[in-house]
Length: 423
Image (cartoon, rainbow, N blue to C red; front, side, top):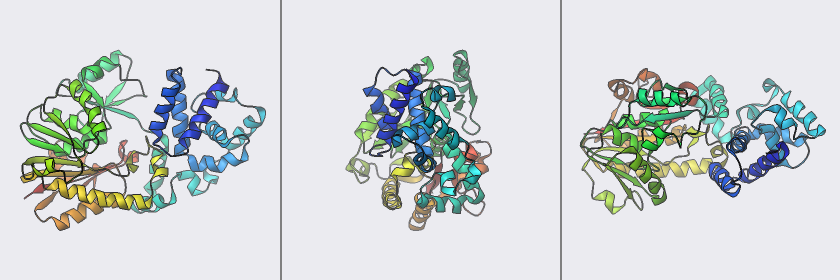
């Protein structure tokens, strides 16, 4: 595509995305469906330009008024993903001079808000939790996410998956914590790779893999993934169970569960049973009360731990929405807890970085449920032989009570988890 035409397309997609009417990934997907002639490189340029604009929106909003032309074009120029010479060939002389001026601005000369690019309501709780680590976190959030996969060890060994990818020119290194994970160099297309089509591996962030590990599901048990979604953790749990026992994948979205079914077929698992429920008090849940060995509650949350890959969330969330989410999380956790038999394990997890959705929920549950004994996540991970397990934890007297993953520390999305055993 001619540089000017590609920049025009970027500007149009930026305009559509910045309305924030829909999730950015949905807007980008819709744009690609409406423009099927776009090639892989053009799609990559369009998508990465949009996500750069979303990540650095406050900075670009600060710089854009000094330029000319439509706002979305100025934003697209600032966030353009691709060679500088290619971009400059699409600009007029005035735009080139303006871009040079913008690129000469030093980060040290900017206001804080133009450096961190976060809404003000989110800044205070993150600074309170992280102190001086706030700035490394914001840098990691603005740098974008890497690509991890999970070897399906029910079918294939991690080393074999790594070797097959290497033969395709795809470099992958073992993840530092998860025994199933591989970290991919770059962002190659994996959907048509033979190993993926066979179900030998799935795309899954290493942090998400660790959440599945915490459940420590055994062969022949009855297990529930209470908020299964599209089922990434469900598949990891099913593989750990060696396709034995019974694994219920509950979710209120039948559409998401439909997305799980072809993944289950690829995985070779026969113990996964997707179940669409109306709400956390559904009768199908009540019938299983007191019968389940292990329950994972990967609760609906703000998703703010995934800002590397979903930067629009920081502009689409609010303090009020977080408060409403916390009430929902509490209700879901209480309902899920009723499923456990004596001696059963409960895991509460989110992909949020806010204590309001994490430690506050876990502490309140422990205070009101004396029949559930909190387990130190550090000890659980050590028993599972996860390297450097203490470095993955926070909270409690010795700092090992909860799982606390941060993008800048662990190169994962931001995750939280708490674990209990029913007495």
